[in-house]
Length: 154
Ligand SMILES: [Zn+2]
Image (cartoon, rainbow, N blue to C red):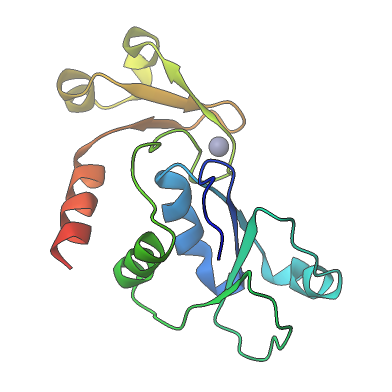
């Protein structure tokens, strides 16, 4: 499987991989999530672009397409670890994509978000990012550090 241009690679996560889609985005890769209500339509028109990889655990999808990646692991940490190893994901581009809506994040001045974040966050962290679409705020906080630590331990 060609996987040279990781910047442009886009993962398409099947209905059962909503959480994984959020994690992929957190690492800075684009991930489209297929909602239950959209699944029929998606499968009917199944047509992946060159840079797209479809992640599913549904073995009934018999299309022999090398860009389908079957994943049967249920633990989110292990799911992400498998993906990380298979596709050489890194956290180099972490905090560039919104976990919720897959839109780009932009850096935002700390002072501008002062009123929107807990005081301890303001005191302890310096780099903040805002989603241009849903206006959600992100920072490289304790949760992110803990998650990376746990991924390294597995
Ligand atoms: Zn967003």
